[in-house]
Image (cartoon, rainbow, N blue to C red):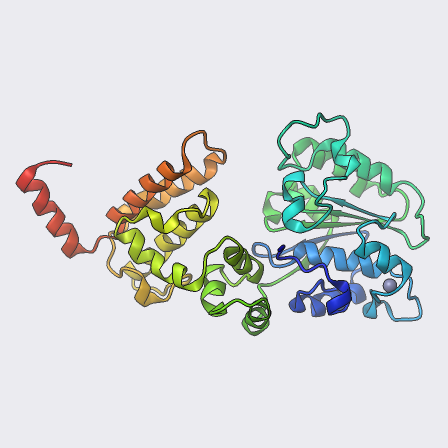
Length: 363
Ligand SMILES: [Zn+2]
């Protein structure tokens, strides 16, 4: 099941089943009039869902309601929106993200597929062809008479060519289109794109809302997984969907400290790297007398070696930056866990190991 509830019917339209979006949605509908909005926040905290809800609200035909009380979820426009077939809405997402977002999972977005062969890997970028199609879409007349909306998510996935093409549209808006750019990394956007947009900042959701939402999705020990995800409930649900529960998360630092790479088996490289980076962060925080963020402090070795942690952290970052890996994921994780074990050793176990070295002088 996707983490994205698309159930306007079950939860009231608009906030797309993410209760912490109700207030920002209302506020944004009431106060933001610019033709381009940049919705950003720390990681994924519902930018895409808010953009869709805003689009639905602007296009909603229940004009007897105040704008802040839209979308109604019942009018013809809202029904088209729910069916992902509204003629005045264009959503640009990289093909590789469509399924996870629950948006057009069949991959029927002609704009993005224009001129492409069918056998290539799904693109992780928003391509210039897609942006050009969006510009053409934006310059035509609204089919249902309530304007047009283009959603770009995540905006930082536009490559340089695509971003420059997009910028021209923001500078010289043609027609009646409004643009919603979503981002978790607004600093990586062209400064000229940032400055052409009115900003909407989404904070990490309140803990109470987030844990209640996770509990409603059947997540046990929601607080543990919420901390594991830096307070981002959708990421916490993503952990569960990957088979990682609270018990598995809590046991992880000690298992990595023991060199047990099977603890991360089946997690996939990005999630395993992220988890090890969090262990590294928390171990470094404890070693410096600070507080942990992702694990309870009693779950993390408390006097790890800072120098070795730094080397581990750099190696984790290096592997993460490589992206695609020609070599075995299991071997990569095994090697990184091995470094983690060295870094997380307490002085006593380090001393024991050094004795071992001097006695038999083997690695
Ligand atoms: Zn409506």
